[in-house]
Amino acid sequence: MPLKHTPVKLAIVGGGAAGMFAAAVAAERRIPCVLIERKARLGSKVLMTANGRCNFTKDISAEQFLADVGEAKDFVAAAIRECPPRQIIAGFKSLKVPLRRMADGRMFPADGKAATIVHAFGDLLRDSEVPILTNCPVRDVEKVRGGDGEKARGGFVLQTKNFDLLAENVLLATGGVSYPKTGSVGDGQNFAKALGHRLVPYQPGLIGLETNDRKVTSLAGRCFEDGRAKVIGPDGATLFDYKGEVDCESFGLSGAAVYNAQRFIAHYLSPSHPLTLSPSHPLTLEVWFGHNRLSFKNLKPRPVKEAIVTIGGVATDEIDPKTMESKLVPHLYFAGEVMDIDGPTGGYNLTMAFATARKAVAAIGESMRRGK
Image (cartoon, rainbow, N blue to C red; front, side, top):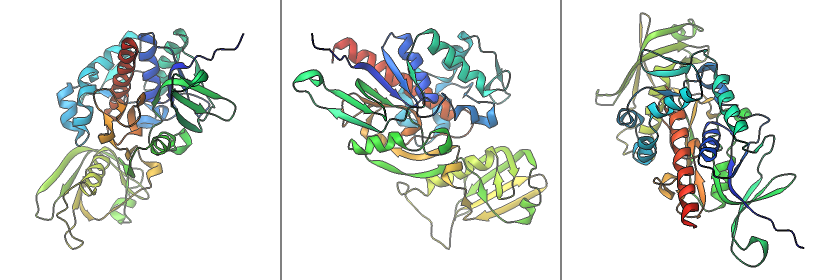
């Protein structure tokens, strides 16, 4: 009797925030899946977030969240409204994770340990008997066309060093390209490109800015919680203003205020933005910390590999925001930072990873119900 090979219903590639959340939603909805992670453990980058404390969301309304996000808001709107920050908070509470709310609404595990969040996912997936393949880089994702034989149903073949896996649906949740030691090396973007998707060039987002100004470097190691960063246009108008932490480093400036200002500048100077600048009339960054108020022009950001978030990735105009499914390749889905979506610091990026993962898995479940 010939062997019959049944494809897994859903292969989730990437075991970070988006991948773990997707697997949890799949388990809840009884969608058979397998979670595949290139590193030896799940959630490597999650363990680093907020200096290891894991600011996983912000206790604000969906509408306020979308207003804060900026350019990605239209694409993620449906996902965020269906999985708003307060629903995410309730979800962790249901897993018996003690939480701590900061005065500005940022949410953390009460013990201040990112490992608590990762362990909560691990326990849930273990108890749900979700198969997890770690230390297992996916080398290629190949679309299979319908035809004769065991591959007649179509789907995808995921190639690894030791075996191939047949899947009806694939969710790419591999993250961006920052902190490559955590496994974020651009795998998902490369798979998407090979399948015909356009990639928006990478830029560092939420990253420190370099300066050798002695007023900054002489204070290296100092943190100013009541800092401020403003971005001023060539005409003197304030384009961005954020009050928050400013840190002085040996290389220059970091901290939430600087990170969010850097992200604003990166988007403002992107090719899609109507430029009104010239080399002789650049943007000005004003930074307050302690008794200092300094102005800078054309500060260089640190490398993308050090960035909290990657700007760029799979172009969102080729993805359906109602389902997170590719418009080009049926049954191929995306979640999180693999796409060209990013938000400010403060729990926004993890929230978008969770919400887009939920949106994708819900769409897969609906597609299965309809027999598509």
